[in-house]
Length: 194
View 1 (cartoon, one colour):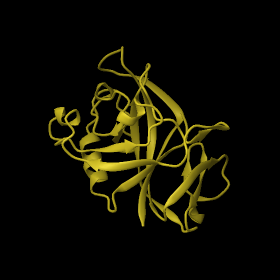
View 2: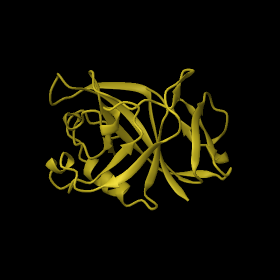
View 3: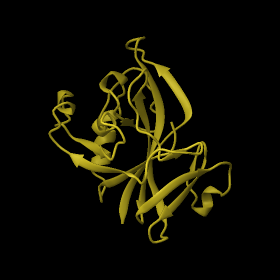
View 4: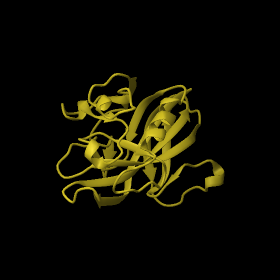
């Protein structure tokens, strides 16, 4: 059994930080899936299957998931994410609107003692490092606690689902601790869109 993250940024919801009008961000959704090793994730537009059939629905449609052995996957949980906008790097999707950007999943590894993340008190520098970025900037992207968008420079900050605070999130710390406790730990990330 493996654990895989899937990130979607649709619907496209941009925001201006209530802490500083010069900081812009974007909300997204991070899904946590467990089951067989996922080789490919795509979105089938429209409501092609009902939730009762086991299909995993997202706002843009239904996930079309291919595993290495044909086994099923299930959704454990989903979270709201924030990413910083305004010229900051973001992970490319594997494929989007007919354009191919990256082969296969991004790798993920649990990391402790990250000096940048450790500047946020109470984190002990814990984060998920993302591997396989296409550019040097993408290779520095982490998934970590981010009470507000100022803590992100290309990284991804999860929080409780529907926590759309444009200021300080009160759920970011607990969300990351919950993600760190998932077993087996996440090992792959698919990005569905821009």
